[in-house]
Length: 115
Length: 110
Image 1 (cartoon, rainbow over the protein chains, first blue to last red):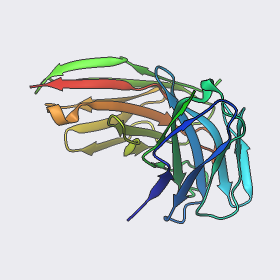
Image 2 (image 1 turned 90 degrees about the vertical axis):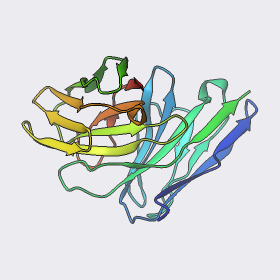
Image 3 (image 1 turned 90 degrees about the horizontal axis):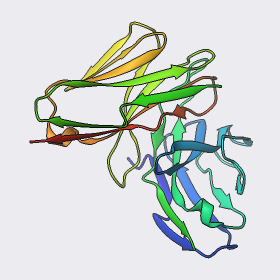
Image 4 (image 1 turned 45 degrees about the horizontal axis):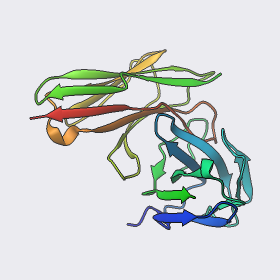
């Protein structure tokens, strides 16, 4: 009954370092997405994927890369970390709903600090 | 521009004091409105989906309603364990991720 699993839960990076936030889901959902949550800003969409091999940009994609080689995994890569990327990152997955959106199921989040 | 606005930003209630949270939206073709609960340090937890104006959903002390321009989350006789941030989100285009409001932080004291 794992759902959406994110690793790591906490991470401290130095400016300029790169890293990958991992996200895996075991619900066979087609749609996966990455959000960041900052105080007073709500959840903002970084990148999303509608299926293996297909990704697209969200509202705040700069500085991040994604790929979707399998249905289960959707890693988020920080290319060169900046203090502005200090945030809590959430991965979510949704089943296909045809013409309608369906509810997203979220992981527990990764708290990232860039110093 | 598609937008979701929640009000109030924060709400303090006494135990048993019923109230409502508001979510107003402007999207070009609503494809679902979603309510979530988020506890500190946790990911958002799904509560309700509404697809059509006039639709209502209930779960324990919570009831969500939908009109063509807004949704309400009614909380009846709240308890301290209902304290959390409540998030509203809309789907505006099939196959894409949701657009979230900034949330309402509810505090219920005994």
